Amino acid sequence: MFCYQCEQAANGKGCQTKMGVCGKDESTAALQDLLIHSVSGIARHAHQARQMAGLQDRAIDVFVTEALFATVTNVDFDPERLRQTLLQGRQIAEKARALYEQACAKTGAKPEERRCPAMNGAMAEDLDALIESGQQVSVTRRREALGDDVAGLQEFMLYGLKGAAAYTCHAHDLGHDDDNLYAGFHEILDFYFARQADLGKTVDNCMKVGRINLRAMELLDAANTGAYGHPVPTSVRVEPLKGKAILISGHDLQDLHALLKQTEGKGINVYTHSEMLPAHGYPKLKAFKHLAGNYGSAWQLQAKEFDEFPGAIVMTTNCIQRPRDSYKGRLFTTNLVAWPGVQHIGPDKDFTPVIEAALAAPGFAADGPDKTITVGFGHEAVMSVAGKVIDAVKAGKIRRFFLVGGCDGAKPGRSYYTDFAQAIPKDCMILTLACGKYRFNKMDFGTIDGLPRLLDIGQCNDAYSAIQIATALAKAFNCGVNDLPLSLVLSWYEQKAVGILLTLLALGIKNIRIGPSLPAPVTPAVLQTLVTSFGLTPISTPDADLKAIFA
Ligand code: SF4
Ligand code: SF4
Picture 1 (cartoon, rainbow, N blue to C red):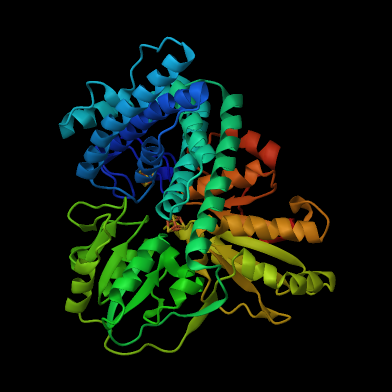
Picture 2: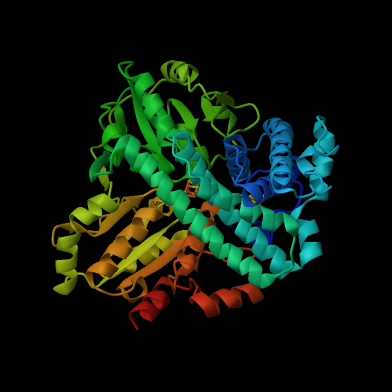
């Protein structure tokens, strides 16, 4: 196997033994490679049908984004589920081919002979045959064909698209779709499938992915706020209450809502974990009295935290890790998340097995201390105090804004972000999003003029809110976003963070600092291009970076 799609890539280069650092084995890796190859072929026909005759099919659109999402780090580790997805892909490929042939008939074009790889004989039902086919279309083969610079940047482009796919899937589940957005996915995958050794075109397509991801985040923002209201500043308990308990992790607010409805009146407290924390700020979710608080921290400490949690646990999206036997029996997955041997909640969202597991578990024996943190500073909440913020900037009370956010990984070097946040001068505001904030979000950063110095904007997809806030500030100060007293210090771990980085670059935002290490697929030559064009800078030390920012 060879995989370098996340920041955990072995030795900063790639996982290439029998097992990736995340726990992905070589069979799963091959099946994921085959799924990407198949889905690119499907998207190619869908792209041609749209281009030629404006034809489209929502089943194809949804399959493409779900398949991309399934290959994101820490989502689907189950070879059997991947086999099922590949077999479903065969039917979807037939649809895409028929759509393409229909477009040819409409326009008088002669259909090309080349069949979609998802339809060919290699798509056997046998798992071993599928794994063997996957090994033939690995990233290694693409690197041999395209060279490390172009192949690496095309993988980076694909990773950004995977991140955008995750957001698009959540929005779709809440009934929000956009034809142009789906068309963008197909166009990029068509380019990926064509294997063109063209660095310039690859850079252009990376920027397109950035714009696709922006639209996906915007759509998801509309879906989440449309369903559950705009987040409002909310105090969240971070210590447990006595009683039976369910912990829900991941990004899917719809799953949380369904779980809250099904557990109402059953004497079970529901706690959020990791990226589910911002859910507490949404009016229609916080209205449930048994949404009791937040437990634990970011995903990478889940083995210890789930072990100690005395109830049932639900993983709605990434990031799942190899479960310990001690809690595997009370762990549940849903949506695209899967681990062999872990119970899966199907699309009907019947959480009865979760509720039964929670009632059978001991629950918390006593209340923890009364400790809270505040969440819920989405774009509407921040805009409501914009006048106060602008006055404080004009009066010199707020010197600078720092957005310290992004995905979090497990490497010890990540203490940079804690140290950095603590070293930020007291007359500066700190904006956070995604799970990197767990490194410092329970610390007391004080206030400026009654405003909390640390404002949590939300999940990684709420980077959309951060962009809205920055754009509004730039408008208020009559300048560009790059002229604002704003510094972005981002952490990356997996593909959603890549999508967000590409969005910021596509918006022309410069001088972003990124760490803790650089993405393995980005070669030194490509990095130089990014540094020259965008001022993208690797993090160094908190002191040196702050000194450079204030220079
Ligand atoms: S997803 Fe990350 S940790 Fe897992 S195999 Fe790929 S590079 Fe390695
Ligand atoms: S922010 Fe990124 S690393 Fe953190 S839970 Fe979400 S997807 Fe995983």
